[in-house]
Image 1: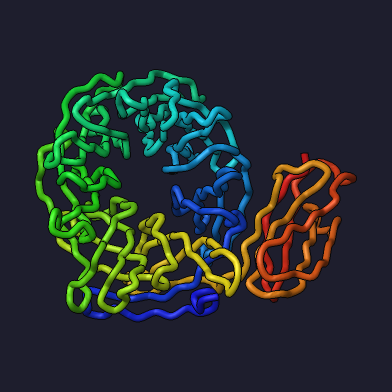
Image 2 (image 1 turned 90 degrees about the horizontal axis):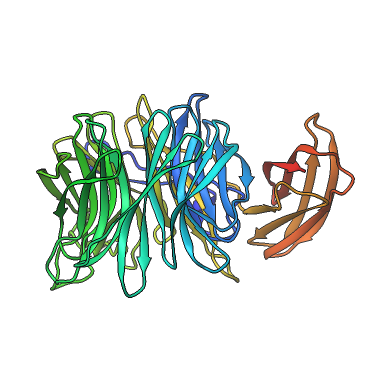
Length: 483
């Protein structure tokens, strides 16, 4: 496995505009299939929370302490997917995404958790189709939420959808916004200073030169008020951010050398008013030694307290690494000036997920990291780095060297533990009750790759337990529940 799993190094940026930081990954138990980090926040107890997705199993609430040590509870929202997540004003969590039905149709989904990550309710849009994806969501009042998505009717249209829910998940209204001159789908939504909503959508016009970002302003009943367009034909929309002056930043990936070169990408940010008037527009290139970056792609952006924003994305094809691949972080000022940029992680290993500004200074960055064993398929991990207040040093704990998946959770008469090792070794699984008493234990020889351990839990009383899984001198810990 690459050295990223064992070492932590940092190159201080100093007076330079660039910095490179090599950080370890943090392994989280829900990593046996692809990971998507949908939201990540600072909590009041000097710790962090995030939402991840594991394909085929559902959504996980992950808890990190201030040292980035992981403890989490797994909630098996099967056939659900997360595309965005955020803290609500009551301290809870809203997760927006979509659900896949048994007939393979999809519907926008919104899930509410309490402040501890416990499930409260799940609701759905009324629009169901073969391609219906939920995307961003926003809290639009003290007790209401709006989620944006896409409704696709094969051979007819692809539309933006907005779905408004009350505090109990009840449907307030469902609206659809159709353009017949191109394909469109919703990406993100924010509230405006007058209480209305501004939505950002991806738009592919029927012609070959039209803009690709659609801004749609609606009122609280979902009625369309105005719309505007930004960007070039193949620009990709990523994030819509409300700034401290009540305007908005539209973060995109720009194909800036079309039609001469399809692979020259850059980050483009537009600052606009709520009605779509452009205040400024700026392209951002990675400043490698000879500007040979093939692609600089935005993934997610967050507004910062100074009125600017921080963007996490991916680089490929730089002069120093022609094979591609770096996790990338960019901070821009309120006037669009590039303040600093940095690369993190190991080339070709990390896929950007999210970034969060820590009050008092520094940032928390997450990604999916891939380890490549000598045999077998690549193993996805969760990568988390916390930057120091001067944004030059990565602070993190040494990583576990194996992923663990527990199912089902809650469990009944049997608990399965799936683990993947990069080399043979002994595996021990211990189950403890809340008084610290070991109630089940299993020791087995471990082989390289994936294997499943099974604990007989038929005689255990209902309640919460703590599972310890140890291998190669490392231990994973997580909460599990007996029904």
